[in-house]
Amino acid sequence: MTTKSESYPLRRREVAKALLADRDDLIVVGGLGSCAWDITDAGDHDLNFPLWGAMGGAAAIGLGLALAKPEYRVLVLTGDGEMLMGMGTLATIALQKSRNLAVVVFDNERYGETGMQHTHTAFGVDLPAVASAAGFLSTGTVTNQAEMIEALPVILGDPGPVFRSIKVRAESLDFVLPPNDGVVLKDRMRKALAGGATGKAG
Amino acid sequence: MSEWAEDVFDVLVSAGVRQAAYVPDMGLKRLIELCRAEDSMTAVSLTTEEEGMALLCGAWMGGERGVLMMQSSGVGNCLNMLSLTRACEIPLLMIVTMRGQHQEFNSWQNPMGEHAQGFLESAGVSASMIEDSAAIGPAVADAVGPVFDDNARIAIMVHQKVFPTKTFGK
Image 1 (cartoon, chains in turn blue, yellow):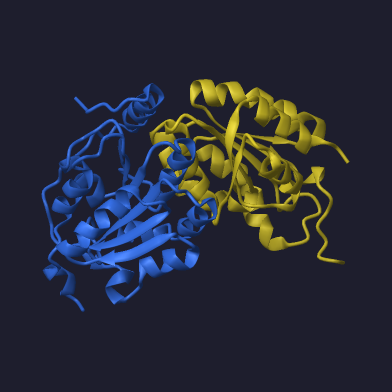
Image 2: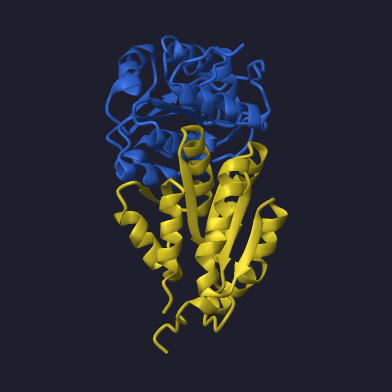
């Protein structure tokens, strides 16, 4: 129980890179903490909104974007601790039946930014089951590379709302920090979407 | 009975509000019904008020205007996400109906009712309490420009005097 996720085969930075490799106009909300660093490590982008706070809010931010931009795919990439704090949002998303929204949890069963304490998922709380019960169209757990290859096109293209828990190794990695000015992060996303074009940061 | 809900609804439609997020209150019943029936709006029923702040952050980045409708008892649920709204300077328009004031039957509503306005103001939201039902629509209309043109955070708080008293059948 206590060390199980330290030996999970999937590594979060590699999974993030695989998810974002051919992103085109994918909108990405990165949950507070490690996921914000993960999406930045995969390449900063005007359509990235990495969170430096607002724990529990990532999925709701993604819903607002998905409703406003139905022609775009929206990916919320967040951690298990962050998702647990905003679990009610899974019900809110299910009601909206957002076809263009995927919520992916990088589940290392730890609070990675505060000392690697266990989250509820370490003791068996099943987030995909919660999403399924709420009414997500597609849910599941990914534990290895073969399942990841299967899940990629579902996350990036299947009718949503899609939910996947990707069990990733509990590991402490270098910080890869995105811009931390919230106004800059908001404005670059809004401008990129208003312009209808993708812009690579920098 | 005044038509303040219609007044506010007309203002929201004219302002181009597209996402109407809410946690219900008896005082908001009519306004929520109007928003739900409006084709140009997506009504988003929330499980907690703080979802609304995050939702409207996403809406704004996607180019849509939104409103958050809630009762004062939910103000305490918002404080975490108000930091998002402030850090990113997200426009925020809130319609907050009051509990814990005039002829409140349920005393458990009083602590948040007494301090909701102060909590919002201390979190960087300009909050004004409107006691005259005829002034509610105009107050929302006055807020639209500062909110959506200048990224202001404004709460229009509707005094409990405006509503029929909830009596729990007594």
